[in-house]
Length: 135
Image (cartoon, rainbow, N blue to C red; front, side, top):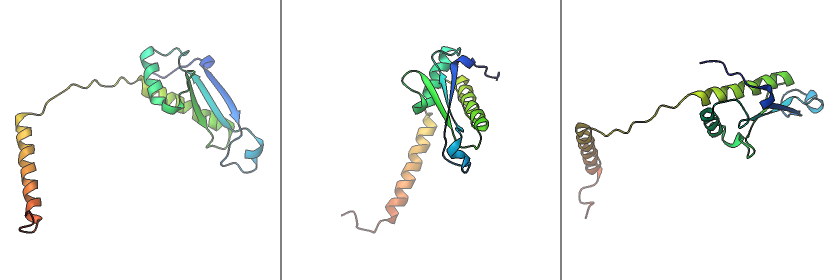
C-alpha cells in the first residue's frame, strides 16, 4: 500500500497542558497535542473520506474535523508524532476497500445435519430430567 501524503494545510495542531507523566514539568509546559484534520477539505478520494468519517466515530465533529488528542507521552514532539501516526493509521484503514458480501444459503445436507444435532441435544437434555416431571 502506498504511503499517505497529506497537505499541511489540512492539519492544525494545538498544544495544551497535559496530565500524566512528566512531574512538575507537566504544570509548566504544554506537552499535549490536539490534532485537527479537516476531512472534507482534504485531497482524499470521496470513498476514503466517507469510510474515514465512519471509522472516526465520536472523534469526528459536526464541522467535518477529525480531532485526535495525544497526551500520554512526556514531550511535545513525541505526542505530536504519536498523533500524526494515529491519523496516518486511521487513513490507511479507511483506504482499504471492504470485501462485498455475497449472500449464500446453507445446503440441504447442512440443514439436515443441524436438525439431527438439535434432536440429539434435545434428547440429552430430556434424559437429565426426573421421570414423571412433565406431568
